[in-house]
Length: 285
Image (cartoon, rainbow, N blue to C red; front, top):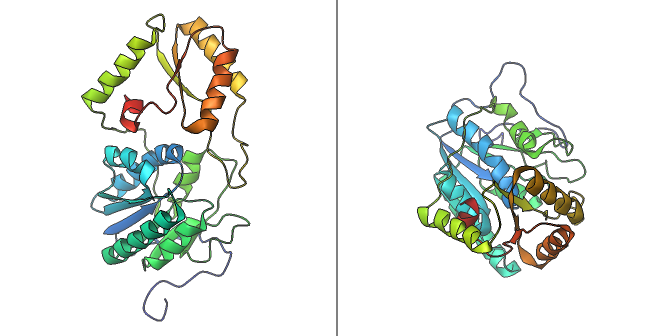
């Protein structure tokens, strides 16, 4: 890389904050690729960070590489110029999708790649193969995934994920601001949500409270982040009693549907189970 005029590669396993007052980039980036493959919740927490980057570099063209299931939320946010999706329903589809994504990303000749994955090595390899001269990613302990980045950022598991994602932009001196995000919701999706609530028979006109009792598996395939569903049931009852809340339990798949059943069985009051019944747009509605 140095031989052909690119930035020098940092020593292996080193974290590379900016040195002194020297900026990381010689000029504002023109084409940027942001990457986060797994986790719809992670994508939601990442949106304010991408918005902050967009405010600092308003003229940059930003593409986003993610799994197909996350495309709808990213496209509705309007923060990216293009969303590149990868299908993971089988290993064959995943391999084919990654190959197509690699061809597309190399063709776009990005100036900068922002890899927001914390553990997955696939994104590290894809970031490197784009050929971008600047690649920022997490140097997660024990993962051996930092060797292919030009700038490495410490990953700290104890921080809130929104702050973890923001840390990736510290080399670029990007800060969050309190400006709200505008996620596009179609009128028919709001109407579908209202119709679902009306048909549920839930009493009262109190606030609608959505409770998601599941959590995605972490790197070790353990539900370490998951609060017991019985506690969610107790909390839901208290929300009904204190505020007249209409509680809606969300979820996806058989495992989360079972958690919802456990939480609702604990409750004294009525609630609504919408597991696997909503599109992303209807969930937003």
